Image 1: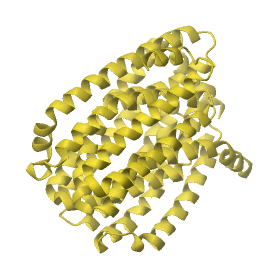
Image 2 (image 1 turned 120 degrees about the vertical axis):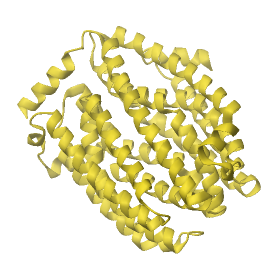
Image 3 (image 1 turned 135 degrees about the vertical axis):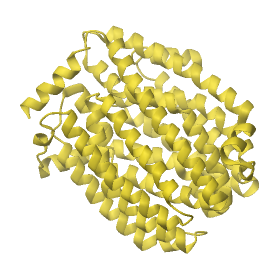
Image 4 (image 1 turned 180 degrees about the horizontal axis):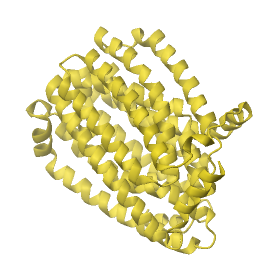
Length: 437
């Protein structure tokens, strides 16, 4: 393990003198990664929507939502903890324990899906069968999560970028090669996840010398990991449910077509977050490192202040563009069948502004071990989202769901800003956000 840690330490120390250069380089690779992956994801979505139609696309959105939330549950917050420990302390001792924990949880979830999926309302037999098949993707996803976590932790985002590009390309190839069966699509996507995990392990081995030597399992470490990641796991699960509950409720309350209309708009908003998510992915390990780097804390703080201002300005510009060009964009990308998605997209576009505030404050609180503030904000906004969806979906369908999502995002911003204002300033960002509010 000593040789591996020495290699990682040398990689991280090369640009320690100038945090701005380091963050800029990492942000560049993450932007390239996100744009490549999101660009291919948009192609994947367009091909899928045009080939399967509104109802078929809604079926896929439901399956993807269930697995997305399940993957968040089985990750149990280990990715965030590992990134923080690797970036700040070069600590790789918990990799094996994290993988074992994810595999055990994945097995429980797979069994649960097979046992209860038949009772999910408003789903066809094909959809349920496809969900059962794709649930096995949680196993390779566990390996993929651990491998990519290591790459992000050591800030080898060039390798991470290449890996995401390969996986996204394979997913596009799946849609091009499959017919109109949701079951066939789930089998192909499961195969992609298995291959992606194998490639991720290979990339880690090639990129980081002695990678496999740090894998030492200990039951003591496993129980310690569970105790330490439980708050992060809860936050992650809340976040994933918060992101996907609209799709689940629409699918069970309004059917596949309404789900497809809303999913198309949500997908465009997700694509518009590409640059922001890339910078945030680079910021998280940088924030963790900035906390530990007492020598250059002042310079780190200045970099972070500039970063969030640029991101907030960018979010505002993108929201305006999406609002104005919603109809031609929907028609161009999805076809006239998805015209009903236009109003939904115009509403969801404004989520980008509170999303930027929420994500920056959340990452700042995570690096300073203030998970309770995040948990409180997430719980309040999730409760609001559930109530508003149950109220507005029966009355307005996808449009009501969009208004619920925007309102909940604003509720979360208010809660986080209130929590930030009641605490000691964290690297100056609380003061900046208080002025903004």
